[in-house]
Each structure stands twice: as C-alpha cells, then as structure tokens.
Image (cartoon, rainbow, N blue to C red; front, side, top):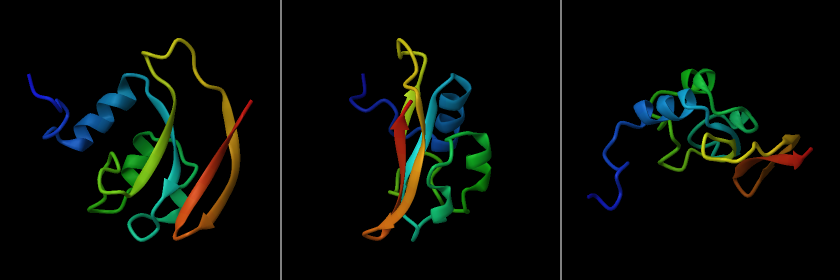
Length: 100
C-alpha cells in the first residue's frame, strides 16, 4: 500500500472528482505571481478550474493557492461562512471567511 496514495494521480482528474463528490471549498490565499489575485475568495469549482491560467495546477500543488474546505461528504455538517475582506499582504492575496 502506498504511503501517499494520491501522489502521481493527475491533479485535474482529482480536482474534478473532489468537486463532483460534494467537496465545497473557497480559495483563501492566492500567490499573484502564479495565478490572478482576483481568484482569492472564489469557490473551488469547475468554473474556477476553467479560469486557471495554463500551467497552473488544478489543486494548487505548486503553491498557486490554498483553500478552506467548508463541506465534504465526510463532514457531519457544513461549516457556514460568508465572504469577508480580500486583502493583499506580504506578496499574497488573502480572502477572509467569517462565521455565519
């Protein structure tokens, strides 16, 4: 059994599988040197994947972005959040999520 079973899987396939199985996430940190800063605060969904520039990893595996997962099949209930401020700081763009 591999120690890291997801390593080596195509990340576009993995991203689509996560979305299709009900994972809900928001981009909370974006590296604007790798992807547009305007992606901060966007949902991690098929539209986002289509908007990523060529060469960007669909799962952010090269540091393009970080997400906060708020719902998934293995969660007992979703985490309710609303968008907060988006700020550029220290070379990154951050999108706050605030509890509802």
